[in-house]
Length: 92
Image 1 (cartoon, rainbow, N blue to C red):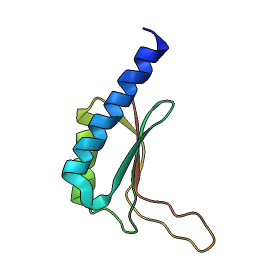
Image 2 (cartoon, rainbow, N blue to C red):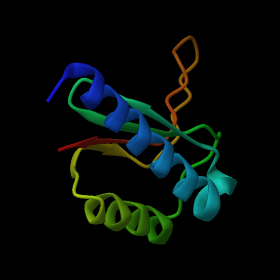
Image 3 (cartoon, rainbow, N blue to C red):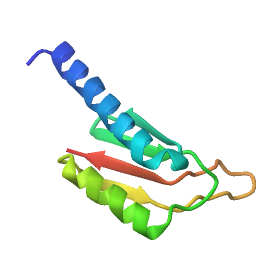
Image 4 (cartoon, one colour):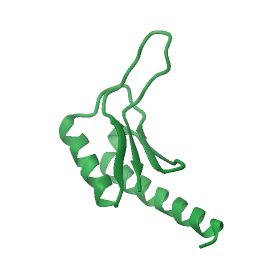
C-alpha cells in the first residue's frame, strides 16, 4: 500500500471518529488528531469527565478496533504548569 493511500485512510478515519464524538459527546468538546501509532482524543474542557461517560468512551474506542495506550479522565491545572485536559491515546 502506498504512503499516500495510508495517509488518506488515516485522515478519513480521524474525521469519522470526530463526527461520532461531536454527535454523542459534544458537551465535552472532543478534538481528534492522528499520532504516529494511532489516534489522540482530547476533551478540551476544564472539568473531569464523569466515570459512566468515560467508560462509554472507552467502549466506543475499543469498538473501533483500537486498544487504549493511555488515558486520563481528569482535568489538571497546576499553577505555572500546562493545562492537562482529559484524553485518550488509542493505538492499533
